[in-house]
Image (cartoon, rainbow, N blue to C red; front, side, top):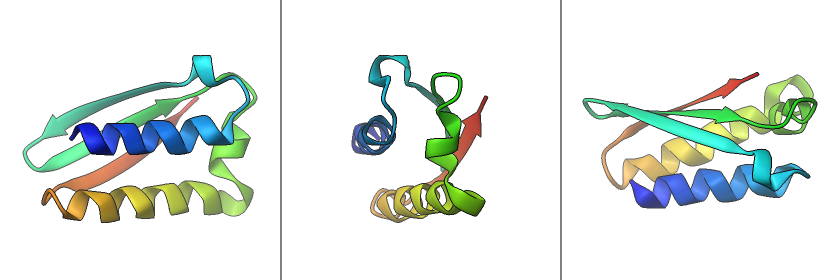
Length: 79
């Protein structure tokens, strides 16, 4: 679980300029982990990307990383 948290923190912080304003929380329900990502106002566009491509890539990487621990990983981007 800690590896997943470190991974999403690293990915998101590399995409934004105000790294100290990144806030990532998670909740676990059975074998599903939901990460909630919040960043500085105006920087969500960098995380989501054109047509949501960056957001979908982040979700794909996190889901692949969760397979090792037999976890279903969801990522939500909150404004």
